[in-house]
Length: 572
Image (cartoon, rainbow, N blue to C red; front, side):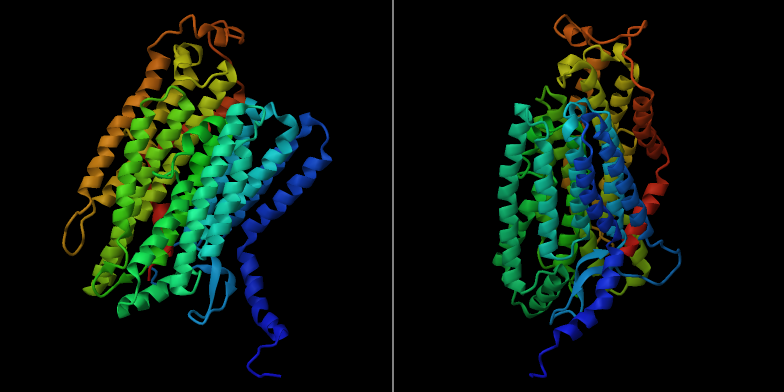
């Protein structure tokens, strides 16, 4: 026997402790996987359509368990501590380049997104139970909630992935599940059309991304983003990197990720899909799916491409590419929203614009890497590193995602309740709605004001931190190269105010006419002329409304929490 060949049994014994440790870090995802399978079995056992909601309650329990186990993975930061703990690898494997790397990692960065996504998914389950669209498809509710668990599993894996293969698998798991859920109301031609367009655009974007990944693998010989960075680092020092091929691979890779976050020019699917999907699924795609996409994109850009800590130069000037895409995305989204008469399509274009705002934070992330390289090169690492983390663009993106969670889900929830009552999503049919339901009208107005970014709302805090991060001066040269991008962001926020105010104008100023009267004539109206809603619906409204207002005034806990994420997601 050749002594150089390792015995498979010995290799299994060598990896057994790693696999055991790896699976212990994979507990939230394991819970979702088992929950998905059990939800399918539960759906088969429940015969009556009226009892299919039991699967929804089961899904809620599974998501709560995933949230709790994710929280247990959180590593608190101790003020003044000099110990920096890295992430724990999941599914480790050996390479000749790096002794041990993994397909995914558990660190505070990944845990943050798991908490955000599982919280969003729980709220979506509750929204779905109150949705008329979902209720009308009662006999398929079991499948609906089972698919929701599978979708959440994919979103959990996206920000944790550290390998190109895992990135592709997680994104495809999210995409394929989303295709089915968008077409959930298959009797509705609008829903079927949306699902078909989603499939076509998704397949095209995924094809571009996997081709880009293949180029990166061909250039570096590894699929690990840590390994890719190591190969490119050595190639940068030896001046042997093929810049043209690398740029092609990166741009094609960004196509698939840009499609997931609805960034231009990969946004074409968004308006039709958001309009045709059930409102709870539209809300989920606009918040949780986008959050997972940004987590994937940030890890890919920050850890896949090296920085020369001697000169402070990035191997690829990807912040410039992202800055141009951000300007185009927010401008296209806002100006396209001006022409929309359907409120779901309007909010679809609004989410495109908000993706552009968050991409501004990504530009600041790239600038932060450049600044950190400069700080290290001149020997001010220890003194300036804490300030680097406080001003990091990553913190601003995470704060924005928290703000967007409550604001956007709240807006879609109110729209769902209104659609349940009047059977319409047209802005013109909102005329005089403030008299029929003051609570819903005021709540939607507050959510829209927060989306605009007006003070005393959490949306303002999100935009403020994005704006501050992009205007943070270089600690060495004191230059602010992204002033033009900040100006574009401010101008776009002003444009967005117009179409948000148009909805409020319809509700509070305009009067219902004879054309809109039949939409509510068949509904039960109270003695004071208002529409009635259940107590649970009102409680749910305040569950979104209170954080939107309170966090707009007292936001320090959100800042501390997100800063803690970055401190543990160390660049050292």
